[in-house]
Image 1 (cartoon, rainbow, N blue to C red):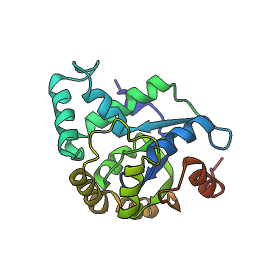
Image 2 (cartoon, rainbow, N blue to C red):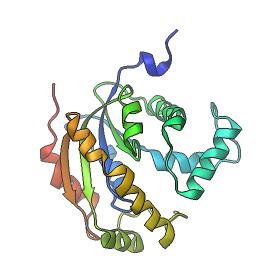
Image 3 (cartoon, rainbow, N blue to C red):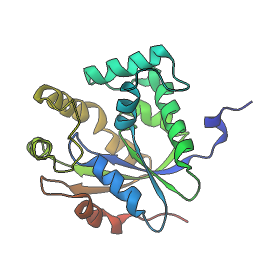
Length: 216
């Protein structure tokens, strides 16, 4: 008997990629509200999903106590899920697709997953990643955006200390940024937008919308 992941058709997806504080979460939420090319969009914010699970007193349905503790520890240390832990990410993604009612021809807006090449390879059987939206943001602009809460999404964040931001930026450059080349080599359309402290979801969307071309 096939598993849900084996039996479902890969969801068409756009990946938002950029360093912490570059505005991925407010952008993903804006795209979900507005839609793209008259298509319904679902914003999958992996970091927010992890924080929600970690904040529960008890593990949610389908998650073990060990997995719950692991997720809490992962967030506290600012680490990434490695290849051997992908089943946790897969479980979260499949639960999200079910809860949001994803169906063709909806678009999935990925934010925070995949974060490195190992996850990208595992994600290939779950999603058809047609576009990569790269938010280019310098370290200085990242710090300014976080300090000013430019995206309006940092109010309740507990992981915005100077040390944690620096660690996340290093991890992004070393582990996540290489996904740009990875997906370019695998045929995804790349669209790059420069982001600074004044950038909003509206201005970012206006800069990339005309570059999104979907195959019919």
